[in-house]
Amino acid sequence: MATESLTHTARLDSLAAAIREEFANEEIELIQRLGELTLEVPAERVLDVCRRLRDRDALRFEQLIDLCGVDYAAYGHSEWDTEAASNEGFGRGVDRDLDLAVDDPRRFGVVYHLLSLAYNHRLRLRVRLGGEQPIVDSAVEIWVAANWFEREAFDLYGILFRGHPDLRRILTDYGFVGHPFRKDFPLVGQVEMRYDPEQRRVVYEPVSIEPRVLVPKVIRHTAEEPRAGAGGEAGHA
Image 1 (cartoon, rainbow, N blue to C red):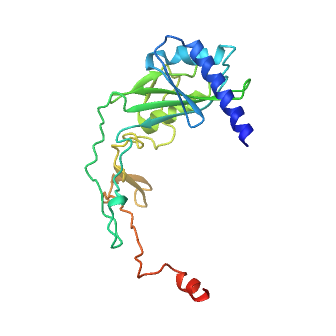
Image 2 (cartoon, rainbow, N blue to C red):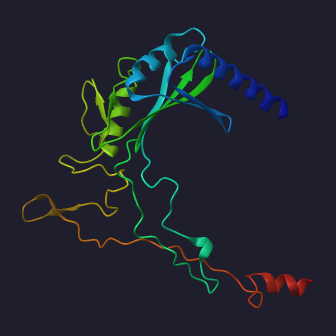
Image 3 (tube, rainbow, N blue to C red):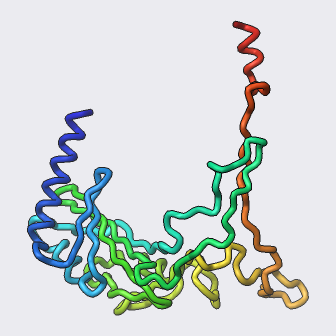
């Protein structure tokens, strides 16, 4: 097992060296963490970087495994504070006024997962975007598999892909308003649908569910209150 780990580390170091050599003195950031490599590049450079990652003999990332969007608003923050929960049995540490930082110029991310079939290397490529309509060049001309992945990122996050041949929704319903994976999209949605037997069709109405924040129940047992099964164990002892 240790030998396999050393082999993986050596291969990762070799790939990192090849990437640094290819993009020496260029405005990119290579992060090596938890046995993985992440290459972060400016949005205006993404097509050039993708093409070189695919075509250079030392890299040869021929396959795009996945492409997804990320909304980093409120990244690293939680509505639940279980550490300060009461030892009486319930946790109510809820931050309902969490700052989403929706104007952050690096709010959104587009993440590409690449595979080199020739070298069995994997690489994560990331681009950070901002604005109400974040936009980056489409990678369809480099990896045709990007087509539906980019449509999904557009549908769920509202990320636009310049040059995409058919950028339209792929998961949500026709006429859907908004982008449901954005952190500022209401959890209960904006409309609900039902079948109307009189009109013989599906109708849309304002959502009737009341927005609320679910709070975890934290139960802590005191010394005087043994856990389930403890009595039986004590009896056997």
